[in-house]
Length: 295
View (cartoon, rainbow, N blue to C red):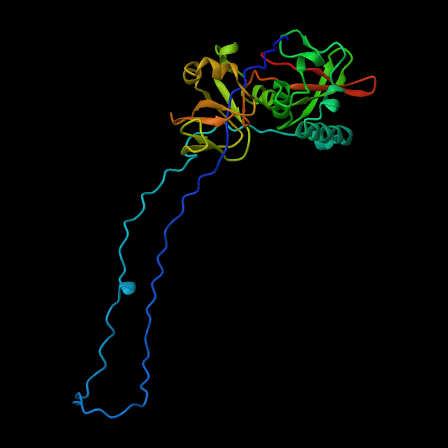
């Protein structure tokens, strides 16, 4: 089976960590005593005096707790925000089709997705066309399922399938396209290095973890923005981890603008060179006509 490059996808997740404060409630209990009739007993009668104040009990004592150390804000650094617009709602036909695709991904409906693959196959990135046999959609863990799920998990927009005929198609996601529009390379920074050093984190308040684990502490929070890709940490990863890369599971190493290093769950981390899906109508039927990536 031919292996197709799945682009350079790298990234991150999210699990929220909320710190809770401690509150102490203090109550004083007054005990009223009622006298009840009983047999007279000879005893000395105390001289009248003012009622003494009730003794302080352990529940009355207030322990002064030290003031909690203020926690630094998790997003207190400069941001490169990315405006991401989804045009799906503007086209009712594509909106319905997109819902069908998303349901098929969730159910791992190989029959439906197979109907979207051209007979001759579809090229992924710069690789040779992948046929249905190559894609192996019958396997719910096949890599194409993850690629498709991540592509459909963000915004979609219109594109031209053929510059000559101006035939309209749809591309999902539009994250990379918006990245180039809003943050074009500056003079002298053109070239693949510009793309390889950046990660686009898509989502609202996505957690950045101190380690590639959901059990690690949160060191930052990102929302639809661009951060630096920690290439050194990626290169130091085990070879088997790199080969087993998943666009959904796993972690992408990043460096925040304040120098803090961390990890974002891959589901939320998009690389400028990562694969996209382009849909178009072929003889009146929706098909996946291109899967660009690495460009």
